[in-house]
Image (cartoon, rainbow, N blue to C red):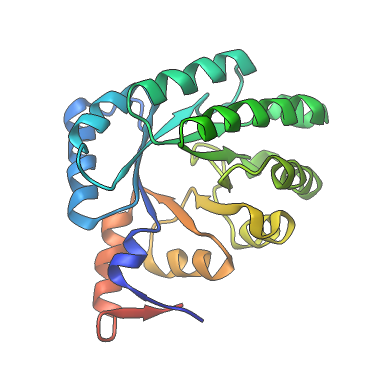
Length: 233
């Protein structure tokens, strides 16, 4: 078990607004909330990278752009262009969705090439890379094979879900992903994480980043639960 301060727990959180109808005012508010609570990152659609980078300038809060979101059904070249544009406009983290059709076709060479190219761009620009599996549509065997690819390519994170599929993160998936990717790559849990108990359990299962739009409610609940300002998980 590990004991965390509230600030350390806040730094697990990618504060999220990926709604297609989010206004610029909504995104500015997201950034201000991230400042207030000292979240690790704001997770936004790629087109909002520049706005967030401007609002968060001078802070240690990252701008996380979602790439080929939420379906993953664009070419490698399109994902590369979207990644490069996001970074040019201030993104400091990239969360891209794998091509799920190619997973179903078991075209592992394609998926390896996709991951290598996007991770290489991120690495060259010192940007955090995250690979979204979208586990709701995958078998355990497919998840494990993707973990094997990630273990070789070494993105910074592999991620459970977009939050737009029928189901999001599960404790079982976080455990499975961590067990098969090993210490080389971290795991991000996202999708359906709305309360403090689920948040803590995801960390206990091995998640080192949590994507949620309920970060404020979670941290406020943890503050009430804390003993001497700390939580043991």
